[in-house]
Every structure is written in structure tokens, then in C-alpha cells.
Length: 390
Image (tube, rainbow, N blue to C red):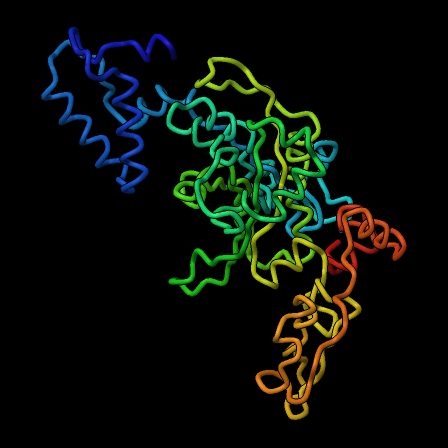
């Protein structure tokens, strides 16, 4: 690859190399969705105008062969068609689901031929090489350290997540992590979308997107820096079983947090030890239930109030309402607390907000309830959750 990077397009050409021109044309093809035949025709025209002694490739196949080393890794993990497990790590050689006993592969109509077509596959795109490339490129390495610099705005004004109380609280309880400016803060987002809606086909996929908040505002919410880390297959909503498909992502995030990875910073011309922390998730309310495990339906659906909720049922519609239930979280001297006209009539809030819980207290409460992960349920419980598919 280093030889190709220095290879002249023709003798005496100093402006571009074979690798650079093919990489640029491949990027244009992807950006403007150019068909393969059109792409090959463009190469034929370019070859006609270049000097006869040139090293230009002649087709899409040759382009891919040249730049395949530059491609980021991709992993396709087979999974149960009912979403109860993925064939990964210790389970990768199983032929049937260990939970619902469903077949891993489709049955071939031709009995003489062994079919190896799986019912479902999850596409996993490892995060580590993408983060390492942010530091290996001159275009992004300086921006990855932007969060640690003085942003030049008024104190107390939040212009970026690094100005937030959550970010500062994390730095306070993890000073070793905060001391290394190469460490990356991440946010995870997911939601369902129907790729075949215009054809009337009911199918919903769930992309898992992770973005780096080390980057400045002008970059962190842009498409090139929002990494598609996994694509959960449909056709239906994974609901509480999304944990099954998140296993590769969780394992990678844990490894990057606890052990980290060595990465090369091109601006310093030296290696550094990179670790990451998932700061928060971004989702709508139904997806929040899937990611957190807290039910967002019913009287106790508010994850902040929990059992201290002041929700009530509407007299006519008999639906649950949380109107005027969250003034309790305002400061004690906030005027809205005593306002009896703009909210519920003749209602004044004097109570303190419910006590918050940290991660350890939440995990302890889960253990007291005897709750377990979807991936740890025994065969009978998961079979009931999946239905009788055996």
C-alpha cells in the first residue's frame, strides 16, 4: 500500500498518485450513488485522455482491489430469527437456538444440497478503528482535543456537552480518565426506520449510531462523525430484546473503558493510550424503555419520579396524565412552585424532589427485585417470551 501511495499516475505526474485519484473517485461514486456501469465508463474516458504509459485502473473491480486495505472492518453475526440470541463467541458454532430451539439456517428445498443461509444477520462495524483514524488524520486530530480547550464563551452558558454538569461531574469522579485529553466521550442513539416504506412492505431496521463529543459543535453532529456501529435486523421492533443485539457493542465499549487501546496521534508523532466512556444515550421515550429497561408505559413511566410519581387519571378520558407533576424539581424559591393560576388551579408545590439514585444503588435495587438480563434467562422463560417456535 505504501508503494501504491507513491506510484505516479504517469511518468512525471507530481500532482496526484494512483492511490489518491482512485480513492477520490471511489468517494465520489459513494457520495453521488453512481452506478457501476457508469463508473466503469468514466474510467474508460479517463484512460483515453491520459498518456499511454499510465497506471490508472480500468474498472470498479480493480479500484476495490487497490483500496481494499483502506477499508474499515465489518462483522456479520448470525442471530436467531426470533431475536432471542446471537451466534457469537462461545455460541458461534451452534446450529439451533439454545433458548427457543429454532433452526439457525433456512432449510434448502434441494435435499441433495446443504443450505447455509441464515434467517437473520446483524451487521457490526467495530468502533475502535474508527476512533483511531480520527487521531491518525491531520484533518481531525486537533479537533479531537477541542473539548479540553477554552471555548471563549460566558461562564454558566452551555454551548457544548463539555459545559454540562454531567460532563463535569464525570470528570470529578474519574480524574484519571479526565486527565488524558485523548480519551473519548461518546453518545449512543438508536431508533427504528422503515427502508421499504414506499413499497408498502412492513419492515423496520434499528441502526445503532455512536458519535464522539470530543469534537466541536461544527463537527460532532455531522454525518461523517456519526458512526453506524450496528444494524439490528427487522422486520419487527426488537423491544426488550435489543440487549441481545447490543452485546458486541457493549463488549467493545467495556474493553475500551477498562483496558483501552494504543493509538497514533499524528499531530504529536507518537502513540498514546486511548480509552472511551459512554456518557449518555439519545432517544425518544419508547426507545428509552428499550435501552434502559425502565417501562415508559403506565403510572410509573417517569424515570425521574419513579414510585414517587404524582401522576393522575383524567376524569373524562381516563388516561394517565403528568401535567403539573414536575414543578417539584424546580428550585425551592422558584415562582412557578407557588403559581396557582397558570397550572393546576389552586395547587401549590412545597415538597422536595424525590431522592436521586446513582448507578450502584440502581444495580442493588435490580438485584433485590431478582431481575436478570434477557441474555441470561433460562430456556423455558425465553421460549415463553419468543413463543413456542421449537
